[in-house]
Amino acid sequence: MIEIITLIIAGIFVGFINTLAGGGSIISLSVLIMLGLPAPVANGTNRIAIVIQTFTAATSFKQQKVLETRKAILMGIPAVFGSIIGALLAVDINEDVFEKTIGVIMLIMLVFILYKPQKYIYGRANISEKPLNWKIYLIFFFIGIYGGFIHMGAGYFVLAGIVGCAGFDLVKANAIKVFVAMMYIPFSLAVFLWYDQVIWKYGLLLAIGAFIGALIASRLAVSRGVVFVKWVIVIVILITSGDMFGLYDFKNIISAILKN
Image (cartoon, rainbow, N blue to C red; front, side):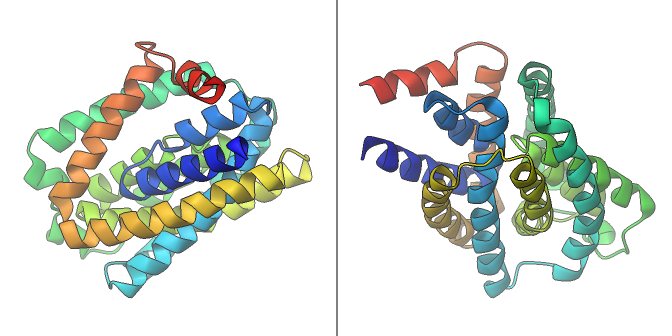
């Protein structure tokens, strides 16, 4: 019962954080590893919840008329191909280098969000109204590789690509972000299933929480606007980057909570 409650609560946080910002998978991966799953299996199992979370959030954003579906599909197609490559590389995962990379990218994005926010969080209509170019397709192909490999923190890469290169504000960028992830995650999940690196009962329990968290977050993103999303991202970046740079160990914190 403790494991069931822990996984559902973790899923709520993951769904909420991933929908509004990114990096929420650090919670679910930590919980799954603390429950005894090897890192590659935790990496695969986590994707069940991400599939549900992204579908829920994308549907909610679509209902609220903030999802640019056509451009989201165009960005998602190269990400799908990249994610298959990334998932194939993730069978024997090494987390350390990639966690440091995520930490650096997150801190760079934090600077952009806080410095000249009118440029990076409110969007640029002169860019967002233009057709996508080949550079954006290439960027999303590499984002797909990373997302297929580990997914943790992939939301920040996607947001950076959508806001910085496509010119959308943070609310619309979040809507596109979850749609792109919704497109590529099932393909990477299929690779992990092929290699028998998914535990369905853990993944489905996480998915229950992720559904709730994603629904709440997608509603708040639209009702509260870009400033609310900005500060959620800032807070999450500060917390997760602290773990990735070794200021504290999130896995040990989760372990201590579970033991108590």
